[in-house]
Image 1 (cartoon, rainbow, N blue to C red):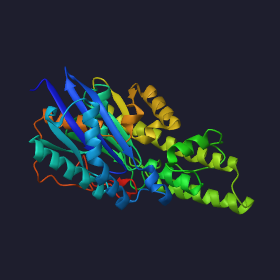
Image 2 (image 1 turned 135 degrees about the vertical axis):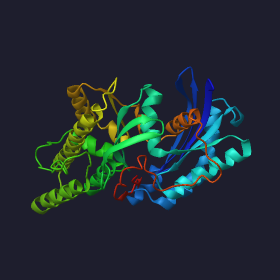
Image 3 (image 1 turned 60 degrees about the vertical axis):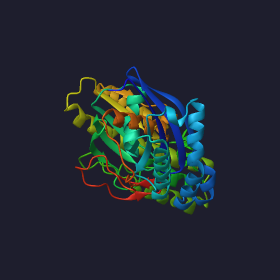
Image 4 (image 1 turned 90 degrees about the vertical axis):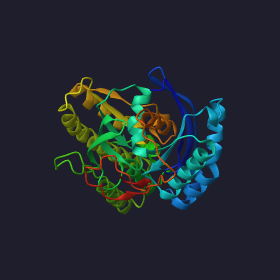
Amino acid sequence: MRDTITILGLESSCDDTAAAVVRFSKGRGDILSSVVYGQTALHADFGGVVPEIAARAHVEKIDICAEEALAQADLSLGDMDAVAVTAGPGLIGGVLAGVMCAKGLSAGSGLPLIGVNHLAGHALTPRLTEGLAFPYLMLLVSGGHCQFLIAHGPDEFSRLGGTIDDAPGEAFDKTAKLLGLMQPGGPEVERAARNGDPKRFAFPRPLLDRPGCDMSFSGLKTALLRARDAVVSEKGGLTVQDRADLCAGFQAAVAGVLAEKSRRAITEYLALRPAEPVLSVAGGVAANAAVRAGLETVCETAGLRFTAPPLALCTDNAAMIAWAGIERFRMGLFDGMDLAARPRWPLDTSQPALLGSGKKGAKA
């Protein structure tokens, strides 16, 4: 097995165009460069990601990102051992832009091509940042996805449950829109909630009355809409305090659901008797202080270690794709020029597909 592996990773599954160079050496990974071009300004007027606009922006930026990532690492394409790229799941236009760029780089340089599942990129990030040993429990909680996964190996995942409709990040965005707050909604809702009373509005905790680890957040968003309309009907509008209380109540409900479902997932995970039990969380919603505090409390009670990658590696990035590529490279898993861009790509094919497709990308 090769002692040192250096890979260029590309990511373009939603609204972030990214490239990174990651090196594996002496049993650990190092991020040599990471470049991300966001598209928030392009979609600001539409209240969400517009797939056609996102795809066009990826086409314009993906090769520039790759160039910048190589330059920042002070390396050339000839110094790479392979090119890794997100091949799904995600918005198909963006995924296709990344895959075609990676194919061109592979064909022109003769480097091996490695297609990476975007969700595997998130799920394997704790191996890059913390050096976690398998098996560990992962909660992926972002704008487009929400799943509990047990990572048994670089290419082996068991899904314990996931959202059957909106992902939490998507629900935060929709809540912000309903309350007239800016996008992206997660940070805005959290900021408003700091001054709010989480007990003023009695929001539901969906699916807690059912066994298992599946989640639902669409009904919670509807409950907030009705609460908002009731306040508007009574007062003729919303005050700053009304918004703060609505945000605090909504955030508390999301955090409560995630904490209870995590408790259930931990019970299933501990049945495997892992030597070093760990719950790791990744995704943009992992930055929410209320959500994180709830998860940390659950882990402390259950006797698990809690970890979360740095925020820059929780949201979409190419370093996680390069690292997942390194994991696949070490297993001898490569792809040919027939690598397909996939809007859906479940990590655990033994489980039924999750329902729904959110604005941040297809569920898997």
